Length: 467
Image 1 (cartoon, helix red, strand yellow):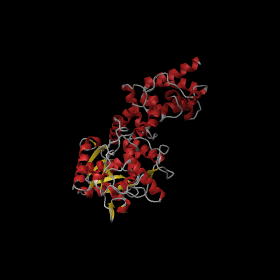
Image 2 (tube, rainbow, N blue to C red):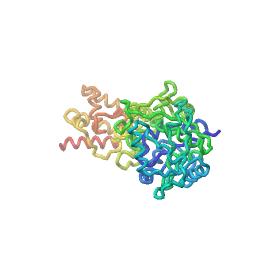
Image 3 (cartoon, helix red, strand yellow):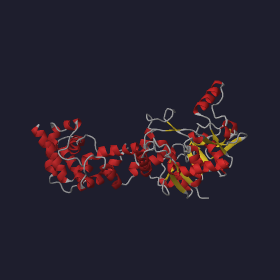
Image 4 (cartoon, rainbow, N blue to C red):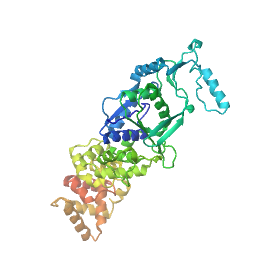
């Protein structure tokens, strides 16, 4: 059997973090078993489904690196097929027309509520003669669910779960306007797409009972079900925006790498021993449903950020230059890209997100004269300015221009002026980066080159004289 999984989001907003994890688990399961991963857009809610939301889902999956097989299926376009199945069940006596009005159903529910009974359809039109149908009511079509026994699901995560059939009612398949319901559409689409495993959040577990009944009523074998626990916030409450329940595009904009997000989402509810850092190849090799836990996972931004720092350090420097250049708010020329590439090994060791990386790298490409922060300006007065003036003259003729020679020259100046090296390095750092925090300053000078270094020093010295 070829494994076929699917991700089936509703395009009513962004691809949120829970949906992204569901997509990842489906993708990994299919890839682990050499199967296929399909995408279905469940766009039957025409008022809330928008092209922008569809594109946001596509963009989110592409950013995460979750490629799907075949063209996406749009559920709304298959409405005629869904209705065809409902009418076939009607013809076979496995479904029936229900003429109960909304007022009648409302009164039924109120009576059940008053009697302390579960509120569900009581089957009043199940065996009633259609000749008694009121002319003014457009009927719905309901399935004839089994009333005796129980429905059993051997869930691949939750284990065996059962429900007594008398706890379920005859669900609607077609509404009074002839449109199919979500429950019918899902079953027909999953069957027609050849889905072998339905992996989704455990908030759909109750749906699985009804869907399993419908599968068997039609005469189809249900797929294997695997209902994964939901994601909670660090406080154990349902995940919300205050916990980080944002769209994938928000995490991209905050500077997280897709490989870090894949690694983090993988570990939300799935484990492989004590392994925390898991690359894509390992994930595909290791992932299976027996590693999914039954308890809700807790989302932790601190852990995600720490993990992102690891993957930043592993990332290709040229790729990081591209990602950083897009976040600098200015055009980066060829020389600027050269500097960023040369400085990236040192820069990425200190950053945990692309935003931090871009902020720390910006001094390499900022236009002159460089803006200095408050702490850096304090280095440009008195002894600091005098030291820079001495250094500037020596640096003009220093040969060779590399970090070892630059550090040796700075030490010579410090010794001659009876200063600690830091008293020389800090004014240099302030003048060349605009800050008192940067990668090793002699590395910075080597990357900037002689001409740019001297020009930046001249800017500061000139500003000091004019001030």
